[in-house]
Length: 201
Ligand SMILES: [Zn+2]
Image (cartoon, rainbow, N blue to C red; front, side, top):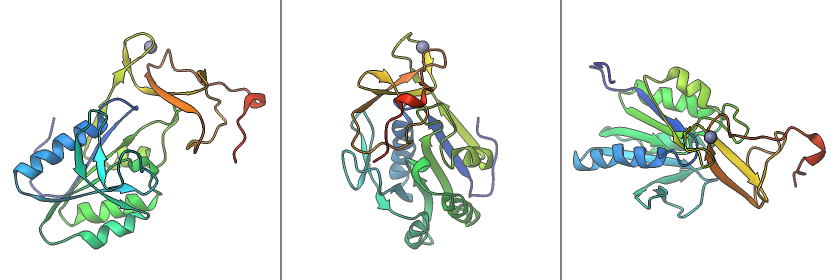
């Protein structure tokens, strides 16, 4: 899968739906760096404070230390001459400037790993992900298992009180009673009725 790159510094993207094992895959790659005694940093957006404020934690409970930042530029302050790898988790929640920051880091000869959701709950490309996929040297697209039919799942189903969410709902819900499950293209459902639209607070 990996072609023969002799110059250090490139972008790897790990993407997929929720429950596809993106964070497990990110942690797997980072653990290998730990064993190799390489210097690496993991950044995540401040918005994501589930489980822990300073760790990247996967659904299977594995953890690795991460630094929560508000703006992608803050990552640049941490770079040292011996930095081998920089990772961004939940990269879909960073603003567009993360692209420039990633390109800058890769140009310095540092390997960059970006992990995140490739589609939002509607099945639409999520934030900066499409551009990162285009610019990446290596892309790993993981699938989950569809909770309805058991086939490989590529989509994230949002449910509000057990019902499929509306297309016009906000991408990021705060404080709503929503739940998520992995579904395939055929079982993924989104309502498109304006009348059922959930009001943004
Ligand atoms: Zn299905």
